[in-house]
Image (tube, rainbow over all chains, first blue to last red; front, side, top):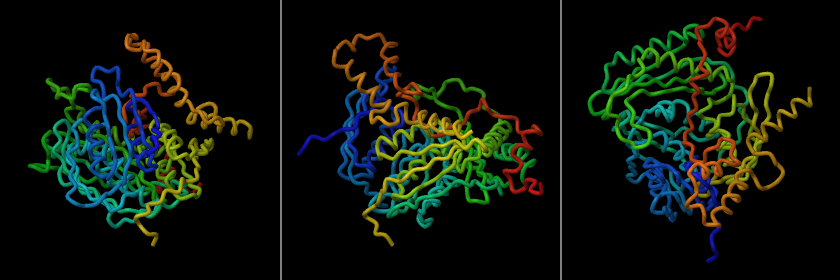
Amino acid sequence: MGKLQYKKMKGSSNLRQRLVLATLSSTPLLIEDIRAEHTLPGLHPHEISFLRLLEKLCDDCSLIINETGTKLKYQPGTIMGGTHDLVHDCALTRSISYYLEPLLVLALFSKKPLTITLRGITNDSKDPSVDTFRSTTLQLLKRFGVPSEGLDLRIVSRGSAPLGGGEVILSIPIVHCLNAVNLTDVGMVKRIRGVAYSTRVSFQFDNSMIHSARGIFNRFIPDVYIFSDHKKGPAAGNSPGYGISLVAETNEGCYISADTAISYGRTEETGEIEEEKKELMPPEEVGEQIASVLLGEIEQGGVVDSTHQGLLFILCALCPQDVSKVRVGKLSPYGIETLRHIRDFLGVKFVIKPDPSTETVILKCVGCGMKNLSRKAS
Amino acid sequence: MERTVSRQNTNLMQLVYGKSTSASTTAMDEAQDSSGDEESDGDEFFKPKGEGKKNLREGFDDGNVNSEDCSKFINYETLKNWKDEELIQSIRDRFVTGDWEK
């Protein structure tokens, strides 16, 4: 057997994307210098946890990590998917959405449709919340021709940082190939929906967040409904917390989201729970702030919010050899990184043109022609 | 007018894909090559910490190869006060309830 040609990369940034794209393009990957000079060197618990999840879902893949965790060798296998009692306990250093984002793309091209239970933190401030994932991320997939049957995320229980205790069930159907899209018209916002949740705190927190968010939107549009999801007992997980996820739907079927979560965090580096509890942002401010963030995203005029740019680009690049055209607001740093990785792994380069009249950016690309051979074209 | 548009266009492409868009070696490959040379001379073990970091940064626009893997992007600093009447008017037409008579 010939020696494998590993693609060499450095550092821990965009680890998930690199692994996803390496898997889809069957590129062996070697990552070095992962936090080599940090006080806590090597891979962090959530990254290891994601690697284990990847192993669980793929047959015949090989993952080698060196002793300090600063070096990772990955040889992709076949993505199996399946529904057979798949459960994954996510590391509590990041929320469940950290795992959902890459899973989503992988599962579309697996052998069998995927259903998996994930346990951990459902809402935190670093990642998009599971509510946003339901309301916005899954909707974006439909634009690319992913069938809505079997596409679901069920929130069984919620868990706030730092102790988690939430549980979600994700189902993703498989596709033969995606459809190229032409998403250049964002349309007008026709309604705003959202979910305010609270775990292990008074339900008044929900009401305050909803009230203050509504207060901002009332000047714009009357069709605003924000659900209240107050959890108690076992469904509320192990830690107190609250947060809100908002989504604006346009008449062209675009979804623009914004969310956050407030809870007692852990200290950045060590992952230990903070000793003295800091002041949390009051719910009124949270509602107002996220409503303002959402309006800021609407102002940008893209067909997705800045958080979803990366996913949008990846899906475009995975389309058949056909032109996709999308409009986004300002390119986010993560979006730019994604574009670079797409070029490195899939060889797809976008044509990026600013549209000065609306201060948006138009991106065009020809997909790499990704096909899932385990599903026949119907 | 057309010229400025085309220049902006290349700038954005450059921002994302690096300066030499035609050459196959990209900013990232170059960074790897240069640091690969350093590793071979064996002195790296005793290199001052700051210096090592500086080398890593070359070739990257965003600087840190170990930056956090996070798709969410909210810039709380540029958050505007959406109670301001002028601001409200500026995006009024992004809503179906906007004034479409003019």
